[in-house]
Image 1 (spheres, rainbow, N blue to C red):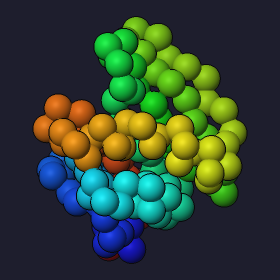
Image 2 (cartoon, helix red, strand yellow):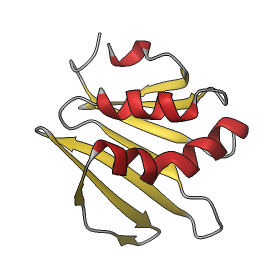
Image 3 (tube, rainbow, N blue to C red):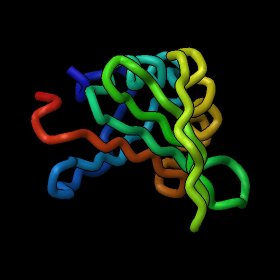
Length: 120
């Protein structure tokens, strides 16, 4: 299932009550395909957040609500509005951050939040 996606490595896992949070990184040779698979397999209420390249301390986020994908940009103290997106738009939205994370996973973290019981 979601935890067995080729090209995605788990760096850390934490139980946050109703959700598990995972620090994940894509293999540098498989960023596009790994990001596509990660988003395509997000369960209901699953979310991916990646630090946006640049110095603004903002995150690019993607989540699944029902059959719909949504994206937004969230910055310190300011939260963007979720917007409906296609799979291709969602991958494009996260791709730059995923590439940066693949080069430096300890500095540029990608966080995946999954509800309990949504993966095996």
